[in-house]
Length: 302
Picture 1 (cartoon, one colour):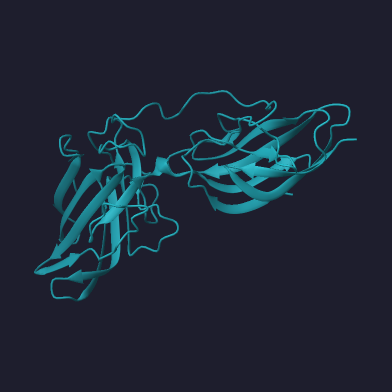
Picture 2 (tube, rainbow, N blue to C red):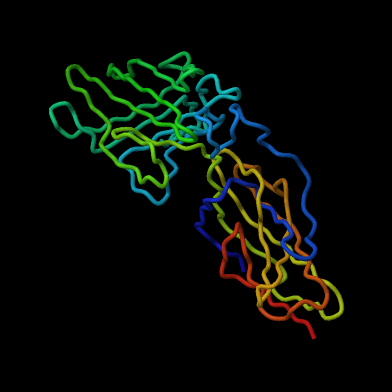
């Protein structure tokens, strides 16, 4: 049986893998960190108000937003980079410096308005980041002749983006929206609050383990854990799975550092957990990325 899930972990981003919590862990893959270092003095989630490289977006799965946006920061954090990873529309093949769209906006006359734009190299040549102010600002005209003003400034690990579209004498502004302090404490409405995609764990599309029953009466037993993970900027490293004993006294887990198939953006990761000889019999809960999956391994020991 394979387990299909729609789980997006809010833990720090990591590749599927397992580490031993108690006892001896199983065999994992080998490899290095696909994301070595950051541009600023702090990593994602740190205290420095500096941009981090990679994809930023309105990645708030539990909040209904009247707007969406993404930007992509280059390798040395000196500018925005046109990348296919920044995509909120249907065309995933085109590279964007940034994309923005909103509904329920307001004009200066109080009328409702909506706006969207995909900023490509056809519209602007470059979008540098002011390293002293940790900010960017661009003004340009889109293919329909509307004028745009878009700016962004980093505050700790959040990027606050403001925008407006000007068509003739009509200015369409972002809708007012108050972000919860728990996720964006310094947001000023109207603006959009973006976070680096690396702050979020991958989506677990499906998972499985085999065998479902092991007998450790006379010898240890191996259990292979497997999961399909997706993430817009790639899976880093973290737990795949762990089996926790019925009493909760022990747990065994395994690590993997690279996918068996696919790639770090969408791939299948697996590793092997070893249950030692003579371990506690009963249902051992499968824990994946710190959460109980509802699945369990049956362990026999006489």
